[in-house]
Length: 274
Image 1 (tube, helix red, strand yellow):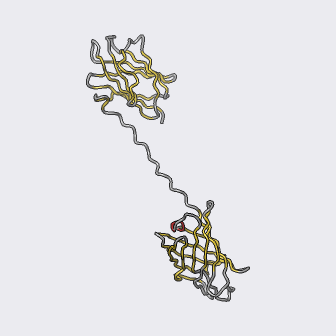
Image 2: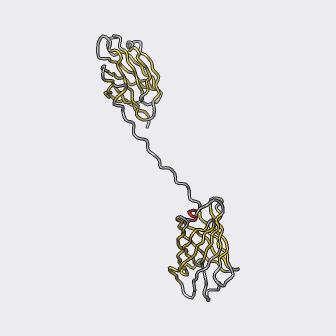
Image 3: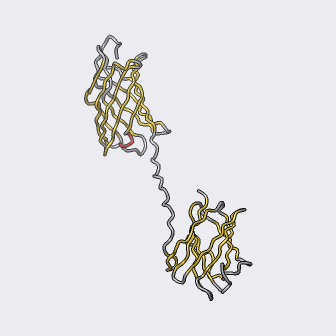
């Protein structure tokens, strides 16, 4: 290869043998390593390879360790031939330093894809010189993560079982485990209702009892906004259907009143958690 006083011949023709069921696309990326010739000649090499439908293009950059001012930047091209790939540094694009002769060279390289770091290695031989050894590495690229889809914000239903919903109020609760106490807010007159929570019926056609003996209905909220809908099944003797609601969440209570008509249900937004 010579010394600093003699011309040095570097880089060149590559033939790459692939191991395993790989394609040319596996060569795409940045490969970094070194060239070693004899006992005391060592060079740093970096390749940028692009594989597309069996055709290989790219560049190589060769320097001396700790002497970046002496370099050669070369164009690479080639193509696939079955399980072998023929690469060559076609021309010198740029070179630096004085007293050095950078020429094209090459050799057969093996591709090892076991482990997290892939290796490209083998003989590297300029014309008329004994072969050296090249060892290049490339880190295996991680599979791209699927995009994270943010959930759509909950939307209150406009209709439930064919009836329009009129949203009456909102309430914040400190817990997701709630006991709902249902009673007639006026005189007991035989009202009956159906209750829906987040689109699911939790009580069907139940009588609305007196204030003194309310009906207890345990419910479980989801974090965020929940939707409670009350549908009037029987208006009783004194329309409209008016129900008092008490939400017991831990040691706290929230009280309110819902009024439902025959053709229009009453809705309540309940917020809990984040």
